[in-house]
Image 1 (spheres, rainbow, N blue to C red):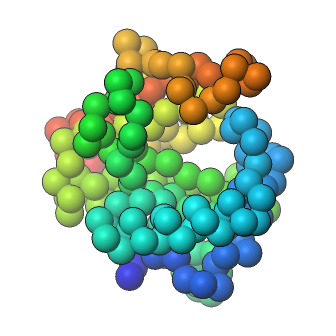
Image 2 (cartoon, rainbow, N blue to C red):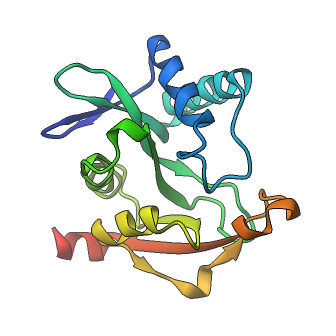
Length: 186
């Protein structure tokens, strides 16, 4: 299932041959700098299976991000329903991404995220899309700004999935964009 194609990218469901790349990005210390732990291969494979299943069942999830000319996976970008009550109400949809380090700095995440905002607002008729990251994760917040999202400091939160042993990763900033803002900006 292809969700969107851009000039350089294909946003699609995961395939079995993508497992190695998925495991690579989930265990890479640079990619996972703002997460409390890296995933083992078994943990990554379980997440891969769950994510592919969720995409198939709901059309939401973190989609494979592949180079259009070769269909080689380079990371992921997607729209996923959050499960962070009471910080984010049930039904909230977030946009998020991870990219193999060798593909950083080429604008791929911004390109994919813009296509997925269009998918979310045009095809899925969402009213709002949010994104959140560790407060010091300037790479991710820069993408959020480039795709037209705005900070919403009243909705910043301490992530309940981050253990106290990693207190420096607890505080998350939230950015948002509404459907009307998106339409005005496109």
